Image (cartoon, rainbow, N blue to C red; front, side, top):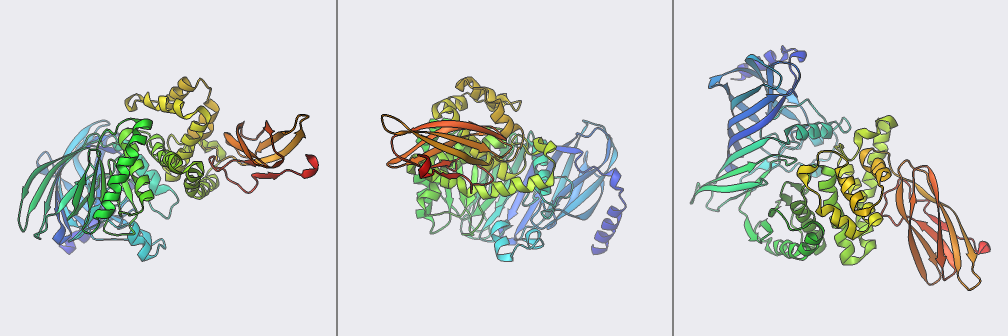
Length: 571
């Protein structure tokens, strides 16, 4: 068998690179039977996949890729076995850093837009594997908390593409050591597969007397059957229709469940108090979510990770996370997931950005604006670093390449988008933004300007400059400084302070300007476009002391020049 494998690899090396377009086919349908055996760390898959040639040229060869710890058993076309060779293919789309790639030679070419249906079978084990992280220098202990995917005897948690290729995919190699290439590749894959129909029949075989529960982040899951006792088999039918941006994931463990009308918390033994904390947090956050986004459309699933330091993962209607007894953390998690449930969008900057904005706005409601600004500040450093890295990678003429509309960088469609929604709310008002969001229909969002038009219609403002600087193009971040502040004493008492603010950056914004004086402070909003100056006059009943531009609600590349001390001699 080992000799046969070597021959297959050698044959694979003979396939001309020009003959294999790994991204020619779109996987339009999966219909899979997935058998999970935790006691053996084993996964076995049988089923059918439908592919469509979306390239402009006829295709004679097809690539199918799965995790390197899984082995191809059979591939058939029309009920007949087809020729294929398999080879290891280095790529960080899988935690092992290597894929098992089957290269199929078809009996005849598939024309452009032509389809084919393949019957497939593969099986193997999925152990914990940190190879892709440790080979770029991540310490083993830290890597385990990030790439925690595994099928284990007592606990199983597996994420899909980008973590573990437990279902077949096909794409060019991408590596974490090559800048943003991995995330660009995954973004292209998700865009191509967004309309795919995924049907999966899961079967979990338990070898213990303790019942195991299977949790899947599918739109719809229906229990098929359960055979109790030692060696119990649990069957579930799940559907992702369409797949959208969801990364199929599942967990298997002896979970208990707290059930709520809008939430299920799946927790491990001794974690019931923490689970109840999330249940209460969801109840408390629900009125806020309804006020902003309407009622949740689907039930949220919070699934406990066995690793208390495991990195949280959320996709679709499921959050996989260590449970935390901190009410603030539980509340933020509940708000984020409920926002996703209530407000759907095919655009990540809207879908993810609004969920992060909701967290900040919820904190503001509970603890004031400064608490919200402090929360957003946790995202600022990573965003500034991402902007600087991007500026070094490409010329300014490519500014549209990483716009919020098409970016694959989480620092942009999560963090930067959060700031964008916050700035929009400050600019047009909370009630106006709520009305615009209430009119949003995801199925009507066919062009980038759809959301802009909704907001402009409600606010009666021309916001083209703002969307061009922040959404349609990546112009970097603004850099504000107070150029001057001149106080003038009034005859009847008090002062008028004339403030000039300069924006050294390439993106404009409406920024808060605060005048601090004896007895208090006054804040006004000032619109300052890129590479421009704007003037603001503020009436002050007390003696002016200093002017501060930006309270942290607008992300900027340099915050060291935001304070201007007013010289006593000028008062």
